Image (tube, rainbow, N blue to C red; front, top):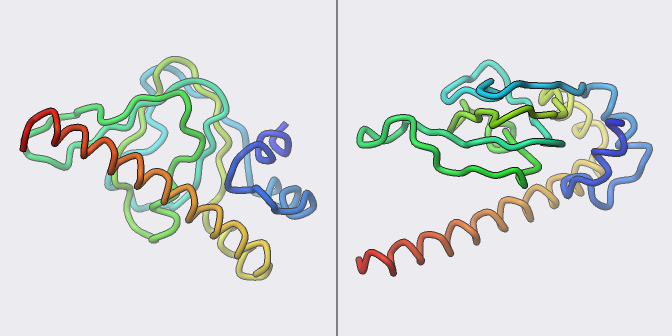
Length: 154
Protein backbone atom coordinates (compact mmCIF):
# COMPACT_ATOMS: atom_id res chain seq x y z
CA UNK A 1 0.00 0.00 0.00
CA UNK A 2 2.78 2.48 0.88
CA UNK A 3 4.64 1.76 -2.35
CA UNK A 4 1.54 2.41 -4.47
CA UNK A 5 0.83 5.68 -2.65
CA UNK A 6 4.42 6.96 -2.97
CA UNK A 7 4.41 6.22 -6.69
CA UNK A 8 1.51 8.70 -7.06
CA UNK A 9 3.36 11.56 -5.35
CA UNK A 10 5.14 14.17 -7.47
CA UNK A 11 8.25 13.98 -5.26
CA UNK A 12 8.91 10.47 -6.54
CA UNK A 13 8.25 11.15 -10.23
CA UNK A 14 10.99 9.68 -12.46
CA UNK A 15 12.49 7.73 -9.56
CA UNK A 16 12.76 4.02 -10.28
CA UNK A 17 10.58 1.54 -8.45
CA UNK A 18 13.49 -0.20 -6.72
CA UNK A 19 14.50 3.12 -5.11
CA UNK A 20 10.94 3.83 -3.99
CA UNK A 21 10.76 0.28 -2.61
CA UNK A 22 13.94 0.95 -0.61
CA UNK A 23 12.42 4.17 0.75
CA UNK A 24 9.32 2.31 1.98
CA UNK A 25 11.57 0.60 4.55
CA UNK A 26 11.67 3.82 6.56
CA UNK A 27 8.02 4.79 6.05
CA UNK A 28 4.90 3.89 7.98
CA UNK A 29 1.19 4.50 7.46
CA UNK A 30 -0.65 6.38 10.22
CA UNK A 31 -4.31 7.10 10.96
CA UNK A 32 -5.16 10.34 12.74
CA UNK A 33 -8.42 11.71 14.13
CA UNK A 34 -10.18 15.05 13.84
CA UNK A 35 -8.26 17.72 15.74
CA UNK A 36 -5.03 15.72 16.00
CA UNK A 37 -1.89 17.67 15.23
CA UNK A 38 0.36 16.07 12.66
CA UNK A 39 3.00 18.82 12.94
CA UNK A 40 3.45 21.41 15.68
CA UNK A 41 4.76 24.88 14.90
CA UNK A 42 8.30 25.52 16.19
CA UNK A 43 8.96 21.81 16.78
CA UNK A 44 12.56 21.02 15.98
CA UNK A 45 12.83 17.44 17.16
CA UNK A 46 12.56 15.92 13.69
CA UNK A 47 12.43 16.87 10.06
CA UNK A 48 10.18 14.09 8.87
CA UNK A 49 8.06 14.35 5.73
CA UNK A 50 4.39 13.41 5.56
CA UNK A 51 2.31 12.40 2.57
CA UNK A 52 -1.42 13.09 2.90
CA UNK A 53 -3.18 10.03 1.48
CA UNK A 54 -6.74 10.62 2.65
CA UNK A 55 -8.60 13.37 4.46
CA UNK A 56 -8.11 17.09 4.99
CA UNK A 57 -5.78 19.20 7.08
CA UNK A 58 -5.51 22.83 8.14
CA UNK A 59 -2.25 24.73 8.19
CA UNK A 60 -2.30 26.87 11.33
CA UNK A 61 0.18 29.55 12.38
CA UNK A 62 0.65 31.70 15.47
CA UNK A 63 3.61 33.69 14.12
CA UNK A 64 1.90 37.07 13.95
CA UNK A 65 1.12 38.94 17.16
CA UNK A 66 -2.09 40.09 15.46
CA UNK A 67 -3.28 36.58 14.65
CA UNK A 68 -4.09 33.87 17.13
CA UNK A 69 -4.33 30.33 15.82
CA UNK A 70 -5.51 31.45 12.39
CA UNK A 71 -6.05 28.87 9.70
CA UNK A 72 -4.01 30.03 6.75
CA UNK A 73 -4.80 27.13 4.47
CA UNK A 74 -7.30 24.32 4.51
CA UNK A 75 -7.16 21.64 1.89
CA UNK A 76 -7.65 17.99 1.21
CA UNK A 77 -5.44 18.26 -1.85
CA UNK A 78 -2.07 18.82 -0.20
CA UNK A 79 0.06 15.78 -0.76
CA UNK A 80 3.38 16.70 0.88
CA UNK A 81 3.82 18.22 4.34
CA UNK A 82 6.93 19.02 6.36
CA UNK A 83 9.21 19.40 3.35
CA UNK A 84 10.56 22.84 4.32
CA UNK A 85 11.75 21.70 7.72
CA UNK A 86 13.32 18.64 6.08
CA UNK A 87 15.04 20.68 3.39
CA UNK A 88 16.29 23.50 5.61
CA UNK A 89 16.89 21.42 8.76
CA UNK A 90 14.89 23.96 10.77
CA UNK A 91 12.01 24.02 13.17
CA UNK A 92 8.47 23.70 11.82
CA UNK A 93 7.06 26.92 10.38
CA UNK A 94 3.39 26.10 11.09
CA UNK A 95 1.16 23.50 12.68
CA UNK A 96 -0.87 20.97 10.71
CA UNK A 97 -4.21 19.98 12.25
CA UNK A 98 -6.44 17.19 10.96
CA UNK A 99 -9.98 17.98 9.82
CA UNK A 100 -11.79 14.69 10.21
CA UNK A 101 -10.06 11.35 9.88
CA UNK A 102 -6.74 11.50 8.04
CA UNK A 103 -4.41 8.86 6.64
CA UNK A 104 -0.78 9.82 6.11
CA UNK A 105 2.51 8.20 5.23
CA UNK A 106 5.27 9.20 7.63
CA UNK A 107 8.76 9.25 6.07
CA UNK A 108 11.70 9.33 8.46
CA UNK A 109 13.52 12.47 7.34
CA UNK A 110 17.00 11.55 8.55
CA UNK A 111 16.87 8.13 6.91
CA UNK A 112 15.67 9.76 3.67
CA UNK A 113 18.63 12.19 3.75
CA UNK A 114 21.04 9.35 4.46
CA UNK A 115 19.60 7.28 1.64
CA UNK A 116 19.93 10.09 -0.90
CA UNK A 117 23.48 10.85 0.29
CA UNK A 118 24.37 7.31 -0.78
CA UNK A 119 22.17 7.34 -3.92
CA UNK A 120 22.98 10.66 -5.55
CA UNK A 121 21.18 10.09 -8.87
CA UNK A 122 17.88 9.40 -7.10
CA UNK A 123 18.66 12.20 -4.66
CA UNK A 124 19.12 14.65 -7.53
CA UNK A 125 15.79 13.62 -9.07
CA UNK A 126 14.03 13.92 -5.71
CA UNK A 127 15.51 17.40 -5.13
CA UNK A 128 14.51 18.47 -8.65
CA UNK A 129 10.95 17.31 -7.93
CA UNK A 130 10.97 19.08 -4.56
CA UNK A 131 12.18 22.26 -6.28
CA UNK A 132 9.27 22.04 -8.74
CA UNK A 133 6.80 21.56 -5.89
CA UNK A 134 8.17 24.55 -3.98
CA UNK A 135 8.24 26.72 -7.12
CA UNK A 136 4.60 25.82 -7.83
CA UNK A 137 3.62 26.73 -4.28
CA UNK A 138 5.53 30.01 -4.53
CA UNK A 139 3.69 30.90 -7.74
CA UNK A 140 0.34 30.10 -6.07
CA UNK A 141 1.30 32.27 -3.09
CA UNK A 142 2.33 35.07 -5.43
CA UNK A 143 -1.01 34.88 -7.23
CA UNK A 144 -2.87 34.92 -3.92
CA UNK A 145 -0.88 37.89 -2.67
CA UNK A 146 -1.59 39.82 -5.87
CA UNK A 147 -5.29 39.07 -5.47
CA UNK A 148 -5.28 40.23 -1.85
CA UNK A 149 -3.42 43.42 -2.74
CA UNK A 150 -5.79 44.08 -5.65
CA UNK A 151 -8.88 43.54 -3.49
CA UNK A 152 -7.60 45.76 -0.69
CA UNK A 153 -6.32 48.40 -3.13
CA UNK A 154 -2.97 48.64 -1.39
